[in-house]
Image (cartoon, rainbow, N blue to C red):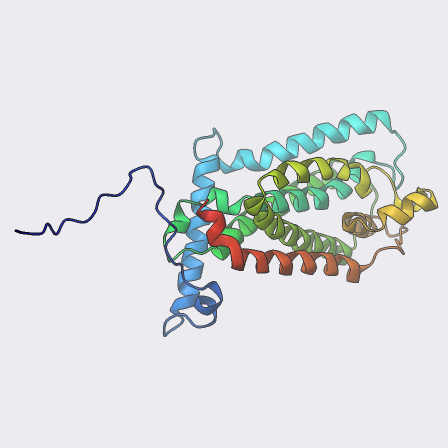
Length: 290
């Protein structure tokens, strides 16, 4: 009697488990000899960025150009609408400029946090390859959306300054600081939400409801200094209020927001980032295998 050497049949409906991936920390720190670890990480991140560009913009008329023009058009329409309702801006003479200087760092944060939070779902198929890690997926989305957000901000603010007589004197230091803090905070909140949405799917809906008033509560349409003391005591804990105030100070030299705290914003960003990294390092495989 002979025994068949054929392997036991497997269920075609059962999803294949995620194979063990390279340790992101070990790969970046050492990798193979000759800097191969760094090369593998860079190649994976660039490939993921190109894949996202082709997937999201490749089938759209205008491609990546539309990804820049679409938020520009939305910001301009909203700016014109608010300028008709509120003819006297809290700072300067142009409401469009006041609104745009507040909205650009807020939009950068929102774009980054939302895109990074969905990194695993977007790159789930490629994360089955051991050479691609969850860190690559997060960094690819972070870098691509950062470049897009900065380009949109530059075109919008540059266009307003070139076409309108705003009579502002720009201090680039607070502007760069505000955009940098927006990037760091967006990365931290995005990584934390990436883990929480993977572990608790209901969190995506809950987070959307919780942050819906954020546009109003971030000082885009008003100044923190003009609020009652009770509202100031509450809204001070919104890190975006600090970022928007800092951005305003870069375009309006007469405005000195004494309430802005770099330490608080950096603490919020690093606290969310470190918590998110710990959760992702521990549970990313469970999230991908769901």
